[in-house]
Length: 77
Image (cartoon, rainbow, N blue to C red):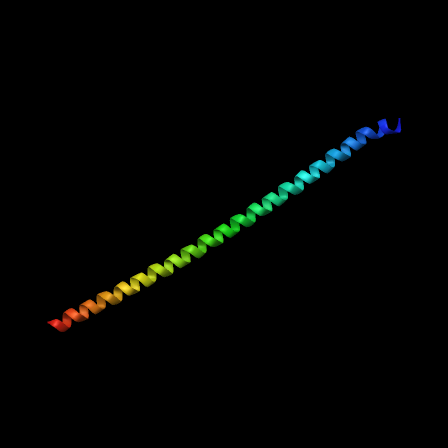
């Protein structure tokens, strides 16, 4: 009879343990998701900064080319 009295308590303990395990799993998933999101955001920011640098370099090179063309045209006149 002792086992019968403990059976509901054992079931409650098992349920509590399962709930705790689910909670831990969900926390791990949420933490991993947040870390992935932060890493993804950082990569996007890095890409934007790099592309901005490429754009600025392209403009600078273009402007130098235009100045050289203008100087050549002025020297020919």
